[in-house]
Amino acid sequence: MSERFHDVLIVGTGFAGLCMAIKLKESGRHNFVVLEKADRVGGTWRENTYPGCGCDVMSLMYSFSFAPNRKWTRMYARQPEILDYIERVVAEYDLAQHIRFGSEVIAYDFDEAADLWHVRTRGGTSYTARIVVAGPGPLHKPSIPTFPGRETFTGPTFHSAEWDHSVDLTGKRVAVIGTGASAVQFVPEIAKHAAHVDVFQRTPHWILPKLDRAISRREKQAFDRVPGVQRAYRGAIYWAHESLILGFMHPKLMRGLESAARGLLHKQVCDPELRAALTPDYTIGCKRILVSSNYYPTLQRSDVDLVTAGIAGFTETGIRTVDGEVHDADVVVYGTGFEISERFTHEHIVGRGGLSITTAWRDGMEAYLGVAVAGFPNFFLMMGPNSGGGNQSIVFVIEAQARYIVECLAMMAAQDATRIEVRAGMQRDFNRQVHAKLEGSVWNSGGCESWYLDETGRNRAAWPGSSVSYWRRMRSPERRAYELSSVDEREPDTE
Ligand code: N01
Image 1 (cartoon, rainbow, N blue to C red):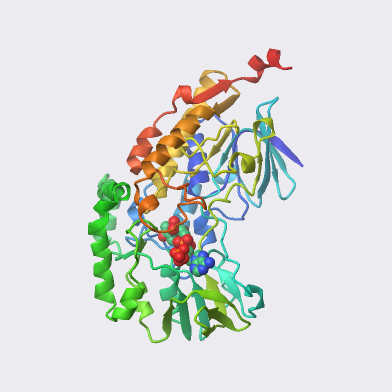
Image 2 (cartoon, rainbow, N blue to C red; image 1 turned 90 degrees about the vertical axis):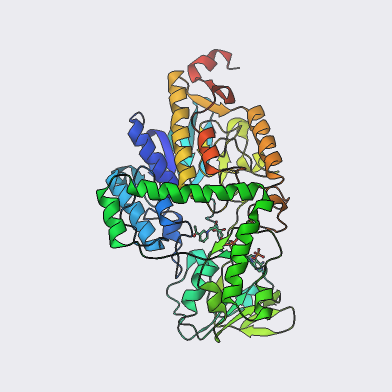
């Protein structure tokens, strides 16, 4: 089945895909389509529905700057509120007409003769587009470690991002593997109903208090009635967050934050043995900093145990640790994070000269400014490698990228170009600089392993600076970074 040609084809309806769609619509210059594998918009906020799921970035920072959400009810929004905001944005910008649900893309092939991408979905529909913008989200492939005997366990098991709501945890013994940003949110919730929860911790994470509270009626009225109040709030919180980045880049400056995290641990955990087990041995910020005021108290419930012995394997009825103990469980929940480095390389993306993304990235993911990859003309990524850091609002980064991509399209139009491709040398130099700057950062030198680093120890996630510095860098594309050409020009040279 074939659909008509689109100037731009966007993949995904999370914050990234939708922001791109809005910016294209505002530019008024392109016809575009948005492909979504599911039957609803929302990206990560549609997928993650685990109990207690919410955002650990303050709500006032977690909306598009051009569409402030006046309906936030709390300083830290929960998942249903965020999803509701995303759906309202879709309605407000009348985007539904552009979205094709149930359209999971399985192949992208670049047609060099025509400067077009051919895109195929699992359902068998083919699309043709001049430009592809892929916004599948960096954390969308659940990672489940292959523990020995995993398949022998007879009870239900599921990953935090694929929560099985048909499994009632009331009165059950639950084993939770992992203690990252997802687990600290759902462990306190499931402990309220389960008979017993064992939390398997491999590495303790630093946790800061969550200063959550309801947004008062007065504040809401002020947001509604006085223009600029929400923007001022947002700005104040934003700049406080930005100052964190200085610490990420200069780990010695993280001492103040570390003492705040130690303060929470001392205040909430009296047992010295448990406190020691929960004290990280790496610099704060090396792994993503967690934000929770109810995780430590939950671990001290009489029906919750922190298990620090390593996992040796699964039995039919539970989990065996390396100290020989078997921890009985009715249900196992994996809070084990996501596959980061394979997020694109499993896909069939074939660019110029038959170059596949798997080959281009065989030594690791690399892009120019996180959005363009040499060898893949007319193809843009959102939240690609080294465009986001830890603990800041990714929505801000996404807006910068969407605006930049629209500028790239304007640059093409100004030259009547049908092809835009980042120059390999520019990409190489850019990455050399990025990785040199990251050397001393807390992610690289903080003494931990994290999903920011790939298996070779190279940081493929973080931008080495503040979000504002990224924003500035993305203000407009540098003409010299890109090769622009048109099919008509090239035709005489065709051999
Ligand atoms: O996953 P994680 P997550 N044996 O990778 C453990 C975003 N997010 O889903 O630390 C035993 O952080 C692993 O142990 P260790 C956010 O960007 C955002 O919680 O590697 N344990 C760790 O404890 C976040 O960073 C929000 O030693 C194993 C855990 O599993 C990202 O998603 C909310 C193991 C994985 O932690 C991922 O968070 C939630 C093994 N073989 C998530 N393998 C917001 O609020 C892994 N682990 C915005």
